[in-house]
Amino acid sequence: MKNSTNQSIKPITTRRNDYGYLEIGGCDLTELANKYATPLYVIDEATLRAVCNDYKDAFKDYEKVNFMYASKALCTSAITKIVASEGFGFDVVSGGEIYTVYKAGVDMKKVLFNGNNKTVDELSLAIETGVGHISVDNFLELTMLNEIAKSYGKTVDIFLRVTPAIECHTHEYIKTGNLDSKFGFDLSQVDEAIELIKDEYTNLNLRGLHAHIGSQIFETQVYHDEIDILVTELVRIEKKHGVKLDEINIGGGLGVKYVETDVPPSTHKIAEVIINSVKLSCEKHNVNYPTIYLEPGRSIISTSGVTLYTIGSQKQVPNGRKYVAVDGGMADNPRPSMYQAEYTAEIVNKPANEDLQKVTICGRYCESGDVIIKNIELPNPEAGDVLCVYNTGAYNYSMASNYNRTQKPAMVLVNSGLSDIIVKRESLDDLLEHDVIPSRLK
Image 1 (spheres, one colour):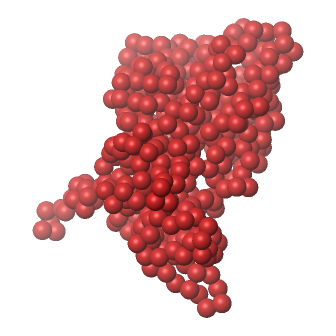
Image 2: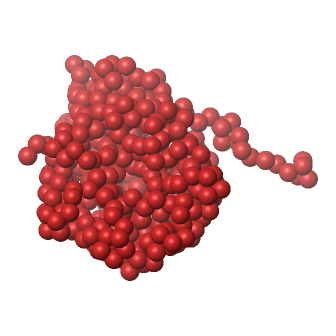
Image 3: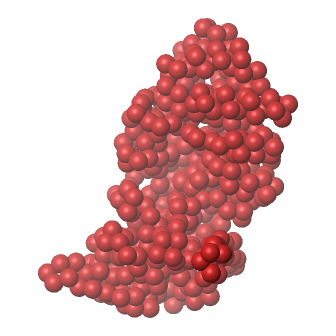
């Protein structure tokens, strides 16, 4: 079984150059830090394209598969352009993501709009821009979408998102397929939804079922269970309602390697499980193979991204840990504070294995919980050193904030020795752009 890019902690172009400094994409990371300042998000284009090709290669023997990049992991115009050029569609979850992919020139028929509480404005934007599928999450949305589609004189292709009641071993906050979830119709509600679509909501065209079981998943059996539930439900729906559905969206969720103890399956292993499970379930029920929609997000973008910080102050707690502070933290990477995420890091400008000290990397924000990495061994960290934190492509920029009224970092794309800004660093004036002082206070 082949390895794949999601099983690597570092971008595939990572190396130490002749000076002993770290390079990614042929660019010296110390030079990037000096040129663009820190904190700085860096995306390696070669790694991003490699993982897209991993997916295409892994599923090449199943003709009816559509890859829908889960934009919530990282959605910028440049990233959208790259992923679209690799033939991927997009899973979007907001009006902002719809507008980003639309303005980037994406074929909107290859876009799926997902989410548990879509607004009227967002659903209208989806119809106006020609979004290919809308995954309907609840009864209110069924009613709203049908009314909006009718007002536009259009029929909209939809999935019903269902909750398959599958438990996967990941963090509680990123489980989405278990029974106690805010997402989707319970399977006991599917019949009522289909009757409404058949009898009343004539501007909705039901194409299939959608489920998503969670994120940062290392198991494979859960995909088999999910597929069997979905295929069985398609068969039941046809027998009970005479509605033949030929599409299943199984979501995403494949994990990546943040630390050495992480052992995610490869894209090839996941493809094998998914394809075999579809075939087994379809042969069991004597039905044709459906079109599969797959929504990888983290496993597409995470490994290609790193974050550069400049080390500042230090504090040695008497008989305790040593804190080393950097010029970013929970505002540019909230994941450790939110769900105890772990990371791997190196000092860019020093040999990796000399004069090692066990330290805790903390951020510059006014929260005791602003800790990026606990108990990591680094070579004599000093003020002015540049720290590279790996595997920050997913859910770092996309969840970034202006906490403590700080500016969001810039993002650069690197490839073959070239670096280009793809997100500008916010200025102090940017922080004030939307502030308004009422005239009565002047």
